[in-house]
Image (cartoon, rainbow, N blue to C red; front, side, top):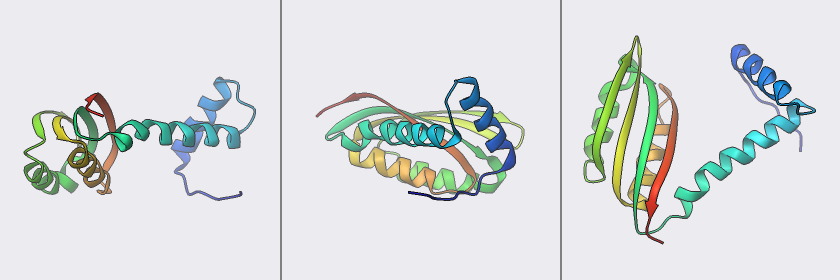
Length: 130
């Protein structure tokens, strides 16, 4: 299937440099690989049931979203056991240590990803009761 994407020039340049350095034969192949990795990285949390322990790491533009992020963190206070926050100019990086129902942790991840000023959210499931 053919598709088109809007990608910032700097991201595309870095992507092209990466797949070429890895010796892949085309950008299309690299995009397919990246999509597979994206899907696989979420499969563990998506399939988890019961209680989980997880670490969420995310970065965001501080002034654009800090009040909304605080509201979300308070809303999910029952599953967030601790946070760590680092300032990097206008951007911040935060980790949230979570423990509780997988459905609540998933919802928290989705809420964090819903903000345009949050660049990325990485999830590491440490333990799951399945």
